[in-house]
Image (tube, rainbow, N blue to C red; front, side):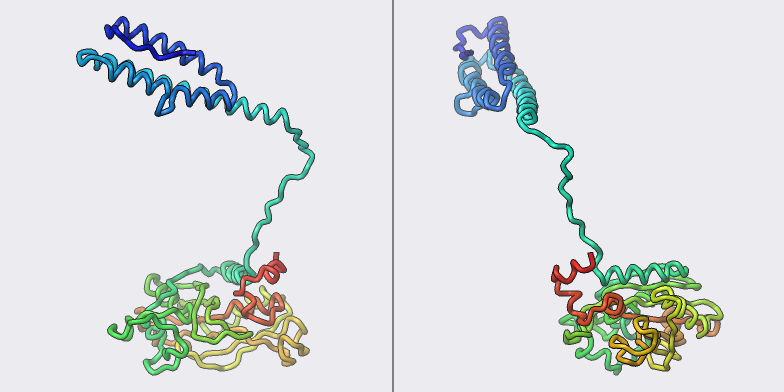
Length: 364
């Protein structure tokens, strides 16, 4: 086994001879390190900081060299260290390969056994319903637009024709961001109560014709119960062009409902009121579960109210520099959770948000 000698002669010839002897021993021992255990011994013997061979070379050769020879000795010591590090790395790879081969030989692998199946997650029932809704309207030529959940009063209320004293602006209905009192009313921030602000932002950017749907999460200060949640999802739609009529609205929604619930479903339009549409309607469909005869989901009425809609109020066009004398349009909006509850026969909206795997696994 190689032992580092003390040098008496520091001439270039003597240094070259000592370095060659050390290098030969290093190569021989690296070849002998053929398994993890012998490699570990080899590495510690040569690379250990306290008493490794390279540490001894540094002490016995470099530190002991006279000043005129330190440069030559230092160059040779550095070259030896680099060569040693390279050989240690090669020996480690060879030892690891040998260990793997030995392990494979000692193990019996039955390739006929099935692999370990990784259970994959599935889309949440609310998102699955939302995807289906989006697919229906995309096939009708609508594009998808998104916007921020933290909105300003201007986009959430003012630009949608909500007057300053409208009850929807009250903190009992809307979740406002704290410490906004010093801002002007229109600049105050809140969690959007509907996805209608996306319609305003879209009309600000686009020149008609506009056909867009706005899916997303909304927030209202509602106490959670079987039919209400402070967080839920909406899908709203907007169509603006020349000569858009109420008949276009009825035809669009009737086609969408038939695409979702079957061609036998009928639609019903009942007058209502929304600040941003005039005229406004509530849209119901004949119960897809009982065919209109009356059952528990439709409360024995034969009809299920699904969404609100109407022709865009000309005042809204004024906020986006659209000419109401040349343009008209319609808008609609629906709650996604309500459709999901109908589709999957769920009687409590809170089940969608509890994260209970026993509930969610039913939809896998």
